[in-house]
Amino acid sequence: MKGNPIRGAGYLLRGLQMLPDPQIRPFVLVPLLTNVVLFIGAIWLLFSQFSGWVDKMISAFLPDWEWLSFLHYLLWPIMALLVFVMVYYSFTIVANIIAAPFNGFLSEKVEKRLRGNVITDEGWKAVVALIPRSIARELSKLAYYLPRVLFLVVLSFIPVINIIAPFLWLLFGAWMMAIQYCDYPMDNNKVSFKNMKLMLKSDRLTSIGFGGLIQLGMMIPILNLILMPAAVVGATIYWVEAHAGVEIDLDQKKLES
Image (cartoon, rainbow, N blue to C red; front, side, top):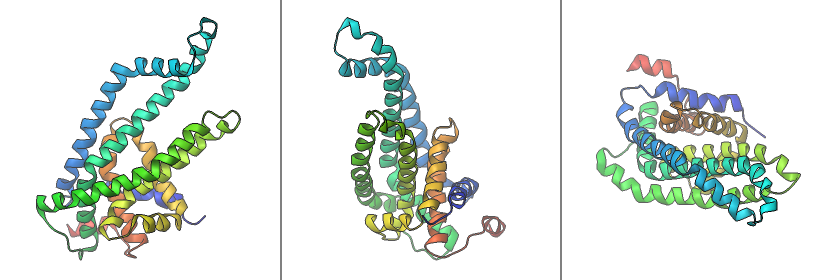
């Protein structure tokens, strides 16, 4: 496989580095607020409903026979992890759908900042115009994601084979994070969803490194609140350097501000 996972992870760090840039800071606000509101909602749901959801899932798997009650204690941590994963991914999907037009607009502004020659529409009308296309693109990602995640769920319950399931979940999660965020600059540049996947596959290790660090950062409280806009910025830097062929020096950009 081609690519460099260290270079891929570096794009996210460079995205974080660029967030304070005064020319893009206003466009970071909506994705950031979306993340904060939905994150608080997800935490509230977990605290208020967690035990009930886990018990219901165990009841669905176990017959109501007293002599099998000991299995409840064995299944509880597995089902608890499954509930956590489901809430986490649901939160991520909803956050990305809501923030998609704003993430696309942020990516446009970052690319314009980096290259200086990208023609974009301005103002809220531009964001509104992006909404149908952005939501359609998010649904394409969802259609790609769901069958594969269902396959992994089934695999996770098959004895012996399920030993490798956690590693497959991590790899798939990293790959989906790369697809999720690299899609914004590529969509802005009229790259189809199919061609976007092919471009990422041609540089798979870089993509996995980028998505893997996003996935890790999403699990860290507080940091995960600013990770969405940082990932959009990082993905745009990745696009500009790897696919548009423009080398970006962020420190030089600061000097030019």
